[in-house]
Length: 188
Image (cartoon, rainbow, N blue to C red; front, side, top):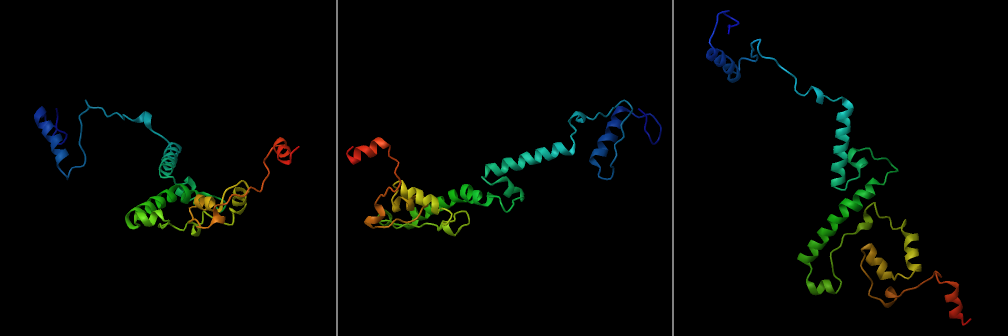
């Protein structure tokens, strides 16, 4: 081998020392290789374009959002006024955490006898945007008309029940009976 500076022949050991010295020395930034070495780009078939990178990042964002029950448009910041993602986020990501906190507080702070009597710690979910009690009016009316009691509806909504007889009464205001059932009741 020939030294590129002195143009004199050097031994293999001197050449190795010269190359490895360049790897350890902070001053040298270039390592010269002899003509017997070739450099080949190993990942030339793996080169992608910007669209491939965009697809990968989009898929990554979607997977992370789904993992934590966060709506994708909210996670990406592309939420619109007509989007329900805020409500979905509160319903599917926040509500389970709030229930866990409520349960933990009740276990640690409320005595068993008091809990059995109805005393418990509970978040007011109606002050959150995702539950608008006025938009539930028609649905609650339907539940009442098919026989749900006031206290059953309160349980469904996570509200405290009322210790009154009328709150446990069932009233069916819709007639879902067949004509044969109606005829039997009337004695026909």
